Length: 426
Image (cartoon, rainbow, N blue to C red; front, side, top):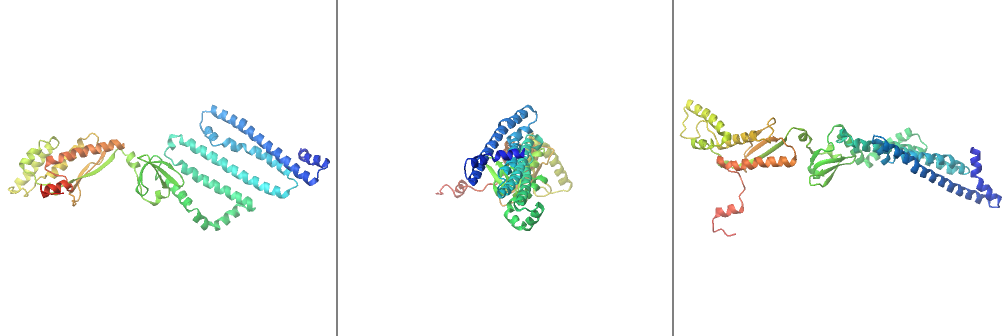
């Protein structure tokens, strides 16, 4: 059969020579005609692959219940596999066409080997993309950095492919090429520093579960505050709450400090931690009339009765001179307000009672005494959380004057005018 193909390939050359054409010119013209015929054969095979084999594969995948084969179609897997058929035809016919050109054949064989390596890499990439896109449809992989995993695997595949390509071009073994590559590792590390850092960071982020897709993170250095939408080898994409996007280098997730709100999202409540600043000279001891007046506040009436009874008993048993309030034990308006705030929070339906609930003093400052509220809301959704926080502090700020307390506030222009008097001219 091979002899018949050789005769067929040399047909035009013999025909032209028989009709008086120069032998060398006839050889090159025969070569050109054979290349045109080979090109037409390859185009015909590609047409059949595209309109018959691939369409048949599509028809088959449409009838199956799984979606993985659908992703294979989208990633051109059948087309890449189908390219082996025309490659086989070229591999068989090309040496016969160029049998009289050994130098060309040597280059041809190298190019074919390189093309096969690249084709295998493309097929692996297609399989990898199909697997990634298929896993994205599964709920258990929604928060996994599949993009980063696929890029890491693809880098290793390309490295192996490039090693085989260089081995083909230089006629050295892959092992020998790897050894020579190690000698140039310092230069490679310098050139691909960012890629290597991204590779290491992607592995650490994935293995240590530092960030998942869907996590809410805050990264002040890059102005990011929102949900992670994508994690790949080089960058992490964050959709901010104003619907803008911020791109963060993946390596920054392990080299810099950022805040991940996943713990809050997985916990039963979201923390409220805010303070009101009490004017220090408004704090005072409570006399009998003050206590009777405050007993009209329902939330603290039982507390005031019990607490005052204990204080009176102590002062009487120790014969304390109460002509001055400072003597003995006393209640203060700030202490009673603190108890009121605590009781109010424990009665609030939106506050999680099984988590921390603290109303405390912080160290006095030049701006007053910080009275800090620390509790957890049941509803963790941002808009509802802000509404609950505002509702609590609206009430507490409005309640402060009932305890003869004052909020600290820096003086405004109107305050200064009133202090200087009506004759003040701006």
